[in-house]
Image 1 (cartoon, helix red, strand yellow):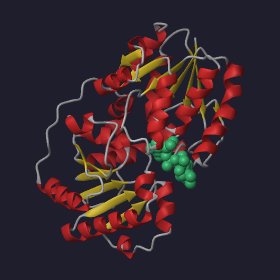
Image 2 (cartoon, helix red, strand yellow; image 1 turned 60 degrees about the vertical axis):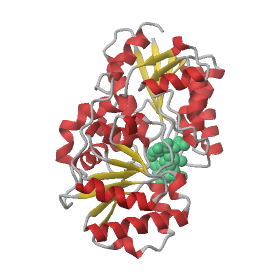
Image 3 (cartoon, helix red, strand yellow; image 1 turned 180 degrees about the horizontal axis):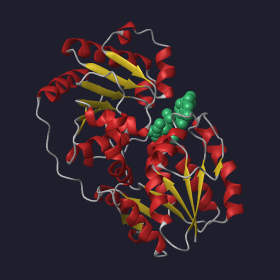
Image 4 (cartoon, helix red, strand yellow; image 1 turned 30 degrees about the horizontal axis):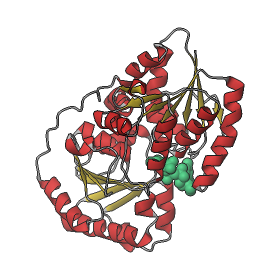
Length: 359
Ligand code: UD1
């Protein structure tokens, strides 16, 4: 059986790595890895392949950046001949990025079965490009691998055939479990013992410049008042937006603006943080697993289990709530959380079993 995996953007790599490894153990399975090139900077892509121990992609479609229509249509155009040439028996796609949806569209038109890893998540916010990608990918997929029970419920409500849904758990946590023992030695040097880790890259936060200015000014004030350092790895989109904002407050001693971090350093940064402030989906999951308090600068989340069973709290755009929560979390004892079912380091093995059973 020929299985073709497609990755494109940073969060895909952590999800595909364990599935590639789990399927490598099966006789009769041939695997091909295609990178769409949605993320192309060395520190957004290559370093992840190295640290995750992934094979180099068999092909890079080199689509690069662009508007949603342009990026999506380039992936569709460049990926179609890959499918017609290589004739895979199954294509696996990951997460909710533009590459995921574009590939699912190509496969469904060519009648090639698609498996979606991380199916069923819904924020119910259609202003998020990822929500559109999730809805379309799930409708077109033949195998839907969900990380938690809410994913199954969402899919059933949308009329998906229950026979296609397989609750396997969280593949991103597979990678975390495997690499956590190596992370601590990758903690960037020169940081104080107590710091708050911040990541922001969603258009709803970083493309709205007046809001981005208020948020960062609020964070700078808080860091001064509480004498706590803020460590902020900058996604390329965020770096671009910040270059247009004149914010002298960010240059103080309390703000460490750093480059996007490799997987192991970022994991170490999360584990050692007093608190994480983010708008990333993956970080909400990773902090919940690690038991590190997380404040999410969004009105909603497609990962509600991180709020109900993890350490996550949604603060939307409420800067007053941000201040209160940062103070509270800094002073409170860490909340003990129970493990989330199936977030156990073995999700990819469960996917491999479904796939090789001939679904
Ligand atoms: C994408 C995903 C988002 C995911 C995020 C992780 C979609 C719709 N969004 O958002 O779900 O959380 O990846 O990072 O697919 N850029 C570079 N170098 C790169 C990649 C991007 O400089 O290697 C810059 C470009 O200016 C580009 C911008 O970042 O225009 C945005 O990149 P893009 O891939 O369009 O979306 P992300 O914001 O990264």
